[in-house]
Amino acid sequence: MELYAHVQGLTAIAIGIIIGLGALGACLGIAIMGSKFLESAARQPELVPLLQGRMFLLAGLIDASFIIGLAVALLFAFSNPLAGALLNLGH
Image 1 (cartoon, rainbow, N blue to C red):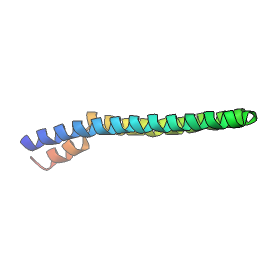
Image 2: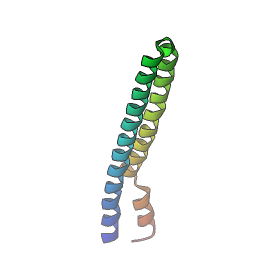
Image 3: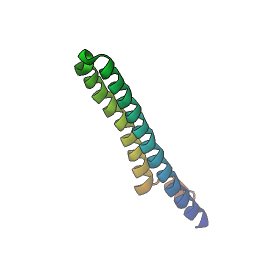
Image 4: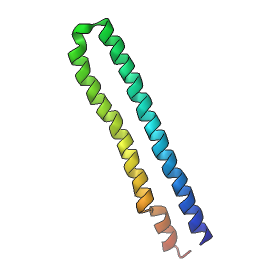
């Protein structure tokens, strides 16, 4: 039973790391992309409509990677496959 408690505790730590680093990466990615968009818009204002559409597409893809990480973290939180495998072993 002590092993099960360790698995649950380490799973909680892993969930926090997945969500925290995923959010940090998404925020940094969108910030860098936004700054480069503003630089290019200031340099060539006639390309703003083209660049704006591409920027929104990339922002959605960057956010999608965070949402996938969030889904994996929720999988570990609510139906932990590691704990299920441990219980099937008979511990």
